[in-house]
Image 1 (cartoon, rainbow, N blue to C red):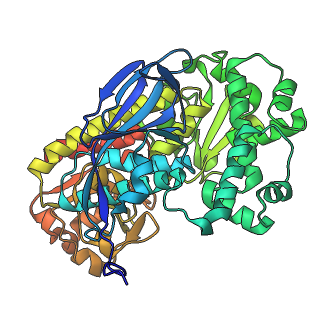
Image 2: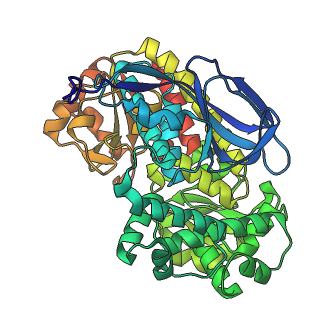
Length: 543
């Protein structure tokens, strides 16, 4: 027997590490050159279009594409026609080490093909973009805990790409690969009438297994995914042609114009006709008549002044938006008939309002789960209003503002714990315990402030937790931000009676004069303008 037989095979592993991430908005020209040693580039297109010029070839850039470039690449981007591209440029390196040193390493033999130049389309793309936004948001944070968190998200992002490249797949995954090929055929042949049974049969996979794998790969069931492809193509035709709706329906695979109109409105939120009017400039950007109760912040950030503004009998109106001369729509005793007078082109609602009450007065779209990600909500609203590039510009300005504020606060308030309270005549609420609330993503995420221990102790799926007297007595935060809620007040100033309570006056932040009152409606809001106001308020009192 050969003496080397059964000896362990020495293997190397490759450790990936992100070195930089940049975001370009509406670029018309851009170039970069990678060194020959170990620098690599992933370029991810989130909007618009353009071309990559490489030697004598031209590579088309479109939303949803991911371009991978190996060391030594010279990448030149050029814009021509349509909308200038918005894209992330993510730089990373690969270090070879002995296998087994890091659990997160990928074997060289499995990863070599990934390092070649290629174009990928990771699905679901929305999840892929979420990971990119996290990496971009924390790109300047060098705290050990955040650096580790950023590295884990980077490896998760690579996992998406490795899977799309086919790395690590063996013969046991032939079924999954067959479903992947079916998805690619669907992208090319979306106009053809089909059924799930036919798709499964063509992939030689059972119907139930086909649907399950399809959903794992795309996040949708097959026919919803197919209709999404058709709607996306219909959007392109509505933006760029004057074709009749009947012809667009036929050209995108819908059986008739009625079904096309119904599916388009269900998916996009507005009718094909309104979508065309907005995106072809028949309704100029600043002249779209929008009613957006509770969402005026998003609309105004995109440069559109709503024709009505939300107000509340107890809370008043959102004064921070500066809509002094805009008529009010008082939500607690709403006169829905008054909407007729303002002839809205579009009504935007959050998930807390009854859509059926508004639908008789104009095209209505409900932005659901708006608290999960304000950036995604802003992009959705911008798409409806025909200004997607504007959303990217607003997000970029906000990110730059937050990063600058974070740098200042890191130097000045390191180690001080911060808490946010909402105080009414009936209760005291602690905010910032959920990553989907008004406070946590801004103060503890973007600004990097240190949350009070209650943030971990009271972790819930809701925005807030009510503080009992026992919990309040333990609130030893160094800094308190307080928003007074008038909802439970029966007389003027009743919500402030807690300030005279001995339990309150004994709090460390109160004794050190480190309690700061903030505007209720701007702090209890998800919008980008309100988030900018939070940053300004924090800087004003802490810096």
